[in-house]
Amino acid sequence: MGQGQRLNRARLLAELAAGTADPAAAAWLAEGLRCWLRHAEPGGQGPSLEACLGVRSAADARRLIRDHWLREAAATLPEAGSWTRARTLHMHLGAARRLAARRALDPAATAAPLVDLLARAVESRCPLPTTVQALHNVLGGNARRAEQSAA
Image (cartoon, rainbow, N blue to C red):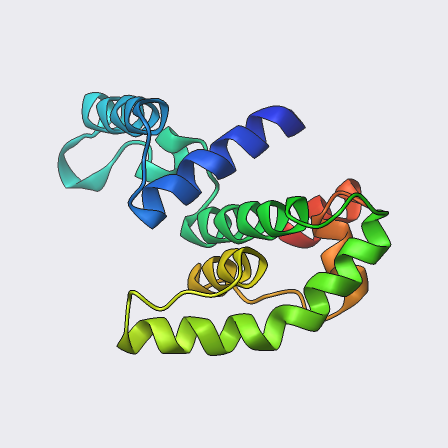
């Protein structure tokens, strides 16, 4: 699967998980469900729903969603190098975790756009990268290494 196709799938998954699906996301999900229903056999045989949606597992789907929100957060930053963006995201992860915890009690809680998008990454239930290097890899600084760590 190409990088552009993975990024689009990540965007669609993120929109569906956030409850803000556009018609393209709904159509993609409907096609995956049709595939799954068409090929499902008695006794649970046939392809998994994940396979029909083009993701390896539920964990892979959560990682795609997390990475989408991390890239969206990085896109809100002024034009800078990928290392600078990764360092800035890393500095704001604590605030994002606090916002995600606050949203569990008050879903209307908001913050600055950067922290809000990072909180969505926290809410993906996929562990966040813990180092600047790992964030840099997710942001595309080392796409091959980020893909290998996901496997």
